[in-house]
Image 1 (tube, rainbow, N blue to C red):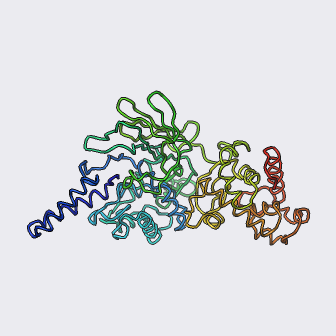
Image 2: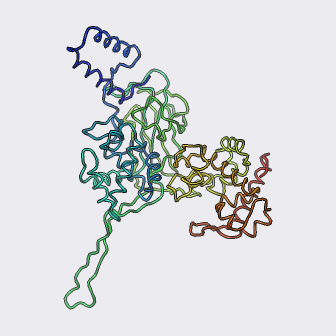
Image 3: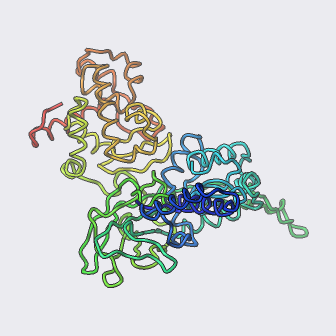
Length: 506
């Protein structure tokens, strides 16, 4: 059983208190304590390693593990106007994203919060931080807002905004990665690698998401007096002080290469228990698909890639973290960033599509077609409730959270394996409303209320509904096709794909 830094420190605290109390304890109690210590050693709970956790980088790269939680917190609190680097920077400049066994003197939990309820509860800590930002919000003045929030931390941090801004700058400098061995022990001399195959984990981010610009301080107008005997008024210039950059995004591909150069894919996975205390269990962690040999004689490299020209690598044994260069580089993640064909969509997401189709009755061919027309098969990242998300471009909170499994966080719409369940359930619901797959497609595109407001009713044929739906829903949102056009093209694509792949037609 792995021993986390949190549990280690509490155990040492208990032993320390017990040691201070020895003069006042009876013989039976002393025997009991000795037995407890013996059992701890036998059971592998005895702490014989350094109490210092593995060194974390000076730049806030390791805090990339908190990105999913930060995005969900921002969405739940209506703070999506703030870029996700700000939330990660807030973590980096307080607790540093380190294990959550903080002390009252340094504040509790993830962001040095004064309330003990935040200890070991990162959701609570970030939610409290979001509430403080809203409570101290100064319009068009993020610096004043954060400075006020800094005074609510423990201990108070006047000028906290400057530290956060510096961390944002570091995050925007380029892609970052952290990798660590799950099957090795940490000692004062570094990682001790076992003589067996182990799993390797990594987290990484790069500033390649949506561009943002937020006012750090309000614009200032400076006017130079006109020259003597000049004609006209003074020359005025508006000086702006903005924070600009791109949102952080998780990598598209993470790969480990062994010493002989053999590639080993790394897949998104739940946090390994051996990493508990160092990595938030809900983080997007990538783990090798199979155990590998890692040693000074057989080092490995771990590379995260976001697209052409955007990648960063690190090595083990070694520091385990690295920062790339190049500033906030592209590409942006539009639908055409790395388009997939219908066959590629089927190959990539086919297993999840089959399962969702069988569970809901939504034709698999329709889910393939919709993935193509909505995103060209790209799992676009979560950007808040006002932006469509994922392969099937669902809004979250909204249709995604309505039809996803109960308790699914809003940001999970970027996970195709989860989103396909919600998309299939949504289509099944729309079909139950209208009794026609083409009308259901139109409702998926423009909303069921829009379809009903067009006087389309249940049991109506597509020939009857099509003329009523021949308009663009919400053109201000960027829609260019009418509901009739959209439904017709997706239905035709699904029908053709079903015929070519032996699937039931819609």
